[in-house]
View 1 (spheres, one colour):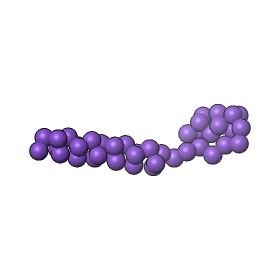
View 2: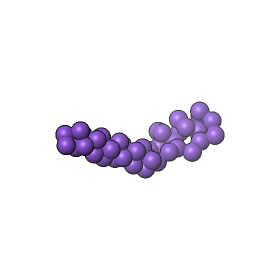
View 3: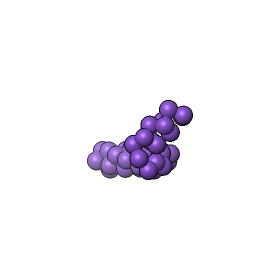
View 4: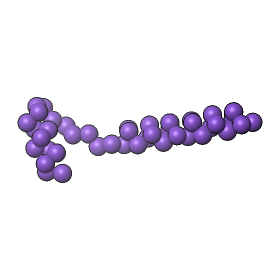
Length: 42
């Protein structure tokens, strides 16, 4: 029983981390200069 609860807890943890990573808004840039300008503007 304890092993099942630990497994469920680990699955919920990894799923939540996965959802956070996939929802991160990525910066679309063609070069390093464009990325720096976009990061300064936000």
